Amino acid sequence: MKVIVLFVFVLGALSAAGEDFFAKVGGKVTLKCGVSSYRRSLQWHHGYDLLYSVDQRGFTRKGSAELVWRSVVRQTNLEISSVRETDAGRFTCLADGTRHNHSLSVFSVLVSVKPSDVLELNDEATLQCEVKGQHHGCEVKWRSPNTYSLTNTSTVQLKPVKTSHNGPWLCIVTCGSNTFSERLAITVQEPPTTTTPPSTMKNVTLFVTSVQGTTCTTCVANDCPLGLSCWMWFAIGVCCQFGMLLIVCVIVLCKCMRRRRVCEERRSSNIYV
Image 1 (spheres, rainbow, N blue to C red):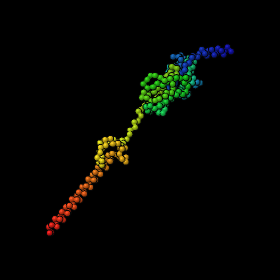
Image 2: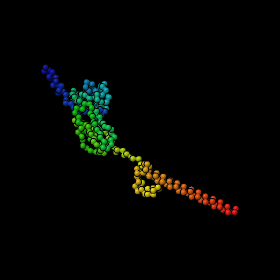
Image 3: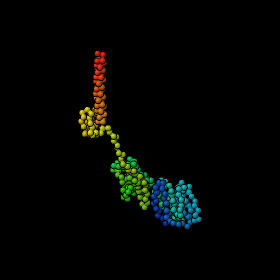
Image 4: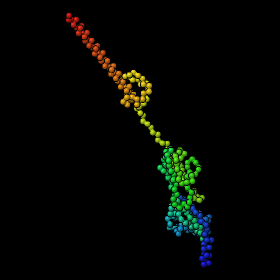
């Protein structure tokens, strides 16, 4: 029993307190070993998989795990690029026999806006920032454009949409001393102006009727008979007046021709007598 207690005590003495690291999917993270140098050997493990083993001469032996191809050892630190969800878990740095246990939490940040990222003034919209994965109580906040104030919530309601809402919004995720952000661009545009096609029913001033000879100072098309435009009635009146004048001219011309014929007949009759 004393041997077991002594063994546990030795393991505890050879283990140093680890650190919790956070990373966003697709990003990059640097895991610090806990020491700045070593004399004999340095090893990095992910769970039970050996990632790297470096001896005192600097010779590096790589493991067979997929994570090896996306990571590199720089001095004593482990740099991981293109982080994946499967990278989360326990990491162990073993430097000269001293074990440093660390943990890596991986999450993804999803930002969205409903109904769309193109909004109109006075509309309503909802901004959502969702953190998926092992984030262990990370704080989520929104930062709006043209301001440094933060909203202490993952959901923002825009009621109504204003011109100040136009621009890039930032979803800021704070995990301990680590800060991550995701950008969301919103466009606020003016509502389309409805143009009314020109109507034929316009106000007509100083319309002179050809039939009655009266003046209509504010003649509205709705007041014109049969729903026709006042200009149409004006044209009809002019045509009627022209037709009447033509008829009078024809009558006068016929009478003149008749009188001329009578005169010629009388003159010819006098000559024969």
